[in-house]
Length: 451
Image (cartoon, rainbow, N blue to C red; front, side, top):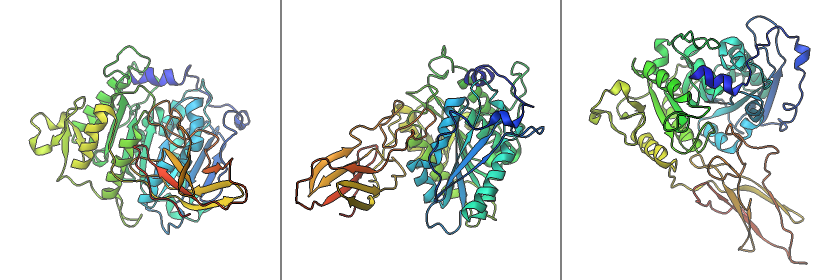
């Protein structure tokens, strides 16, 4: 069940309320992170000893799309429980693929990193009522002032969360439904019904306004769907309970079972990002002071939650309030690909690299990611001929190889992979011409960057 899953993630649940803040001085593994120079900004708050406030220190790092005049929203990428997952949050705002989603909608990209000790009770942050909701909103205000975008404190939120982060994101939907444009819950959902066996988890109330928020429950098939004897087998019963409670009241909630993974994130970003993109296109208002737009209902598709075929709502013959809700035909087509083999297709090449520079024999460049398929690698050409691929082979033990590599909680590894290449064998006395070509994760190539 969910209580078992959270406890497993956090090892021994030790509630640390009341310890002096001095004991939370920043130390390994939370003292190494990428520099936050514009367009990145960071704030850090020490642990609080006040009742109801956050008992862990927390970093918030935000990326602001260069050149944006006024933000329309913020995409939040929330890690899960335990030191490893919490540490992974330190690079979340630097993810080029998630930046592409944020930029497409004039949104910031925010990544929290809670400094939770391995044996601490992660409910003390992943339940937003335990101080993390207030700290998050303070972070938005302070980062807005720091970045020159005060509207950051009032714009809508698009929430993505993994494991305990899914628990947090779902909890934020329950607490602030009028602020959440959409929420993707990977391997974690909030509890909606009190259960005396789940003593460490407090149930949320499901408000009527939350039923209008698009939510996707996403988990691996090895988390209790087809494999029921693993550490994470309780994730599926918790998702079922959450889904039927929300959908049974007409909520806009779907289920997408990853056919290949367990509690890792697998290839979920290739469906999560297009799904969030579709929701943000419909929901974000032109001005942050205006309310969120309702999701359209004219092109809804439905599907059995553990099935593989979706159909238009008018053609669905079973109980629609027990079916996964999909907002459009395009999303439904991607859903059918994802639940089959996670190979969501893409026919659009990535953007061409920019600012290609040569200093001595070192080549550097900049590149935005393809919104649908991210970045896998770059091809370096010298004098019109293939010279190298950077990297020769991307790393990702959980899914498609990717340029920035990926950690368990769907964030880039440290140190961040630089966009650079050193030509080890230039011809003496000859001035070479170089070109850089971006390759996305389905193998499509961009136009060459400027020579």
